[in-house]
Length: 130
Image 1 (cartoon, rainbow, N blue to C red):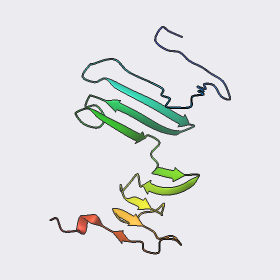
Image 2 (cartoon, rainbow, N blue to C red):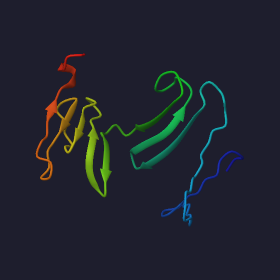
Image 3 (cartoon, rainbow, N blue to C red):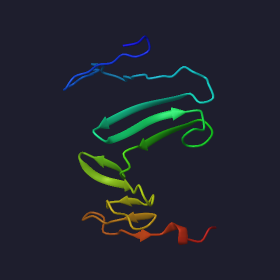
Image 4 (cartoon, helix red, strand yellow):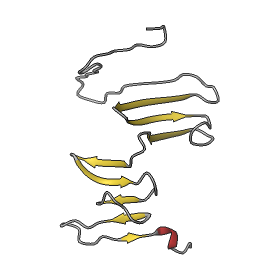
């Protein structure tokens, strides 16, 4: 361990932060640098799968300017789920967004469910601009 890093290693629960607060609770991770390329990432990984949640002020990754990002570094599609059920996906090759489908075939592709019987698939690039 050097003076700038703390490392916890283990096979299970190598790092836990628990709170017991009947109110708002925060965890802060901050890069205090004001340099032109200052950046802060939280990396969550399992094997070859990696996702980054971060902010930066530079232009090295996503262009110039201050920004926040969620970056899927594993090369797969981005999936949003609720209670273990996939509800939306962003295809990593085409950028198509699917709601109710994991294989969107157009820029925006929705699939109806039993409670919502109206779904559509539409290539928004074909829509006229107004």
